[in-house]
Image 1 (cartoon, rainbow, N blue to C red):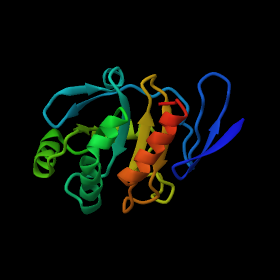
Image 2: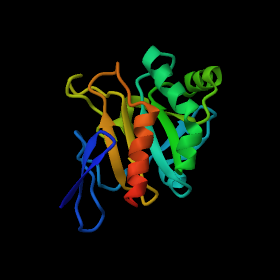
Image 3: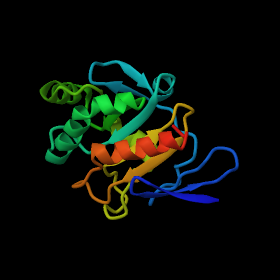
Image 4: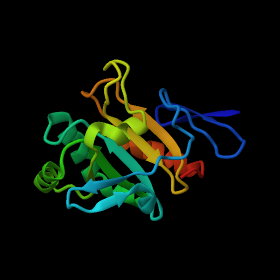
Length: 182
């Protein structure tokens, strides 16, 4: 087993089959992503595996539209979208808000990526986006999935008051790309 430091997270690469990465939290890391189909802000059905046919994906689980930290986080990703795209990564925002709320939120802040509705946090729970500090409640989280459908990185915020900034995630994505995992 070899170790490597990756954008603020320790990474273990196991040379048997698919390389596995480990973050501070994350039994899902290194495993095949769970497919899902959710509705976006325009009413279109977005299926994860269809998106993965075109690019790697950054799933952004966030608590709610129009809240201070969520707005700041998603605007930060919007402002760095060109860098995500240049690295071959598509951003998908996911919260339990209804489609109409997502549409208004996306329109107000000119988001250039899909916001998906996850009623009951079913997809967030599939990706184990729960915080111990929040007594197992769904928290803010980011998940990077390569085009082969493997989860390469997952970070769950300990509270909903913090978020991974785009420059941190872009560093992780560059490291994954340099390691030929993305």
